Length: 252
Length: 266
Image 1 (cartoon, helix red, strand yellow):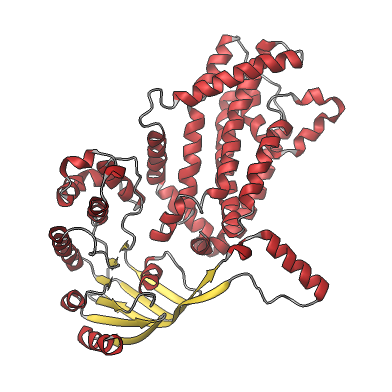
Image 2: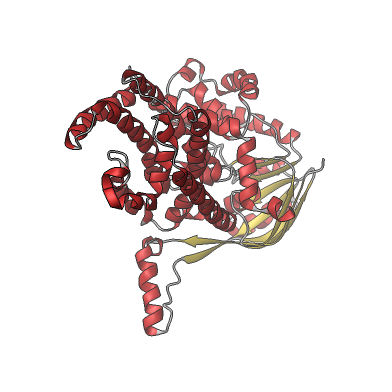
């Protein structure tokens, strides 16, 4: 089966709820004002932040797409939209293929559970069965390099060790569509080299890859297409080389 | 049919049924973690309930001038079911804003997946109080209605379904409007006194039919009454089923329209 993602005029608005708009009292007092004054207050409840503006893009089988852009430009938002965590406010997103996302890789971990148990827990939350996990457990344990620490509670780990475990347990299955947010910053040099290699291998097996990173060299070596984003909009899309040149010309 | 297949609520419920293994395992593990590093484990809670219910039994049977033997099973079963239901209600506002919020933001499982996880955990907690009811029943040699082999599974199932519906509805509303949480938490303690858990409806004399206005009466009743040999009461069953239907409608309207917004609220 060929994987495919089509984005058509996709907009995504974030409602930002401040303390007032979350409370019913505010709603009621506004409601009262409408009746008494016959004018509705300007405070409709929440401010709107435009997360993504008018995104049009087709991703096909074999695409390795780099996502470029400064912090807050909408890279993670776009990845979360593709993953299905957010749904578009307007426009359509159609997607064919199993998706796996490595966005916030440490999710599903319990502080009091041991390393082994956390590998099982996080993968069960991802929908794998216990048998599948038992099969890949030795590989994950081996890859994490945590050895006997895997029998100890997660809360005793240092942040570097936590990152190692999070990464190792997130790479268990190979999906059709792989979405990755920048994460190589944690862990020591040895481990980030190892994890880069592992991700490269995973990328070979998946049919669509969307990869957000600030490591331009890495993006250049992996990706064959690129999207350059700025404040929620695609300002450039095309080959990786051109996109990187464009990105550098704006931000450097 | 097409409409049903595209309905978000239907889709997410089917997803949750298919992933029964995932959330039940997670619930089981939550239970395991809860009692890690304790010596008595889950039996602490059982012991706690046993102590407080026994104490209450002697106090109230004296105050109400009742035979303590028949009151013992009434109180134990009622109190244990009440603990289950009231804890569900108290926890409901927190379901999406609490520990599940980081899951909802990080992975595209439907929000109701985490409701199943939570409600199943509550059910498991309730299950290990069951031996206490059996023990007390044997102790005072209480007769049971034989119909209980049919009504007990149906009753437990109805409470479970309602816990899913209620937790989702209240969880969504309270994720958007944060007032619901303190409201629910302040309403639940007086509800214990208003529900026939410690007292029997017939003690109200001519006002006894008012107990049917309290939804908790129905859910405590459908599990308890046949278990301790009370007369089969059709009214509480009809009430429980009507509440279920009512909640189902609210759930479908709310969830299929707004479940995609939960991620922005938490």
